[in-house]
Length: 280
Length: 93
Image 1 (cartoon, one colour):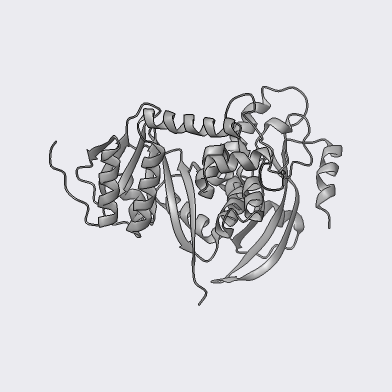
Image 2 (tube, rainbow over the protein chains, first blue to last red):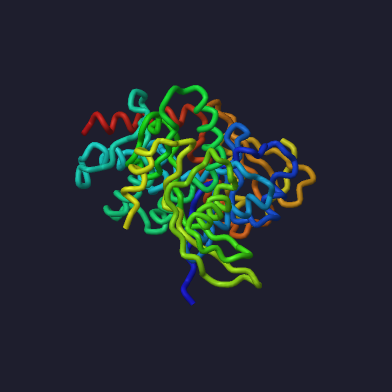
C-alpha cells in the first residue's frame, strides 16, 4: 500500500464562537482530533496535520468533518493572500531568507509580485504563486504545494454562497453592466475585477433519471453544485460525462462545470466571449 | 499559583510549560470531555488562544504547533527586538 502523506493546512471557521463551551468537543468528536483548535480574538481556526493519500482527500475530508460539526462558513487559509512572515513560517525559513528571495539577492529574481497591501508595510502575496516558486527553488515540500493548489481550487466550494450573496447585494448598487464573474480572470468586464472570482470544478450527483440533454444535465449539475436553481445564476458552459457508475439503483453523474457562470448576464456578446476560451 | 493538572502526554505537557513561561495564560476548561485547557496569549497585539486537546490523534504534532504559535507570540518586547535585529541585518547587506 502506498504510504500516506501528511498535509498541513488551516481552516478558518467564521461561524464558530471560540468561547462556546462545547466547541472543542463538537469538533473533536466529528473527526477534527488531528487539528489544533486555535483562535485569534474569538475567530476560530483549525491547524490540521492530516494523513491522507492526497491533499484533496485531506482538505475535503476536513471540510466535511467541520460541516458535520455544524459549521458552514469555512475558508481554507492557504487560498488567501499572505504576508512575508506567514510565507516564512509556512516554508520554515527565516523572514530574512524570504526577503532575500523577494529582493532577488537569491533565486532567479522572479519571485512573484505582491497582489495587495503595497502602500502598507505588509504587502500580500498570492500563496499559490509563491508556493510554486518556492517549490521550484527546493524551498517548499511537494505536499505544501499540493495543499496550496487544492486550496486555491476548492475554496470556491466553501465560499460560493457568500460570494453569490455578496455579488447579488452589490448588483443593486451598481449601474449598467451585468455583474460578471470569471474564475480564470480572462473575461473580467464591468465590475468583474472587484468581485470575488469563483472557481468551478468537478462535481457529481446522484440522479434517478438519466439525463441526456446537455442543458438538463447542466442545470442539474449547477443545482447540485451551487445549491440553487435561481434564475440569477445562469451557467454558460457545462460539460459533463453522464455515466460514471451506479449508486444503489441510481445513476451517478459526474462532470466538470467549466467555470463560467454569470449573474443576470443577458448580453449575448458577453456570453459568446465567455464561452470562447472554453471550447475544445 | 493554583496547582494545575499535568497533561498526560509529555510533549504537550512540555509545550504547555513553555507557553506559561513565555507569558501565556492557563485557563481551565471545566467540564469539556476533550479540551484539556485553553492557553491564551495576552501580549497586547490581539488575543491568541489555543484549545489544547486531552487526547489528540498525534500529540507530538499538536505539541509542535503549540510551540510554533508561542514562539510567534512572545511578549511584545521580544518581538520588537527580533524585528530590530532583522532590520539591522537588512541594512548591513
